[in-house]
Amino acid sequence: MFFEGGSFNSIDEKGRLVVPVKFREGLGQTFKLVKGFDKCIAVYTKERYEMMLQRLEEMKTSGPEGRKLVRHIIGCAQDCECDKQGRILIDQTLREYAGLKKDVFVTGLIDRIEIWDTEEYKKYEREGGNADYEHDEFLENALKLLDF
Image (cartoon, rainbow, N blue to C red; front, side, top):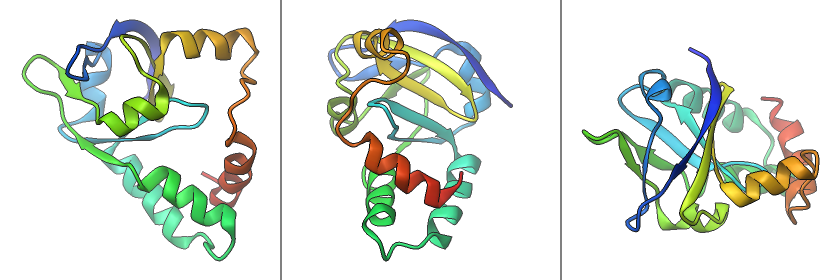
């Protein structure tokens, strides 16, 4: 299953988001939400997340990049499943990290779904995918260690 396309949506006052129908089937019963890169939330199927864990386990964490990458991805990971209305509850920690307010953009990117604050996504697009987030360079170097 590949995820593609995107849609604008909103989060309610309790931090719940209706997952677009086109993504629900591909996610399976349970899935993972993690801090993404570029200030978004990444949503992975259980299988893809487990593959990532295996790669992280094999990666060297003796250097600061490896440790920071593991903390970034695993430190705030959230188990998730849709309720009967197709909603997920996004933890406050992840909402704060991504700057999620009310309006969000949900997009499928082959192996994952990303959840963006709409204004952050528009900023990212305006700047040609080069939005200046304080941790990007460090995490990009760390991601090269993972090669995933």
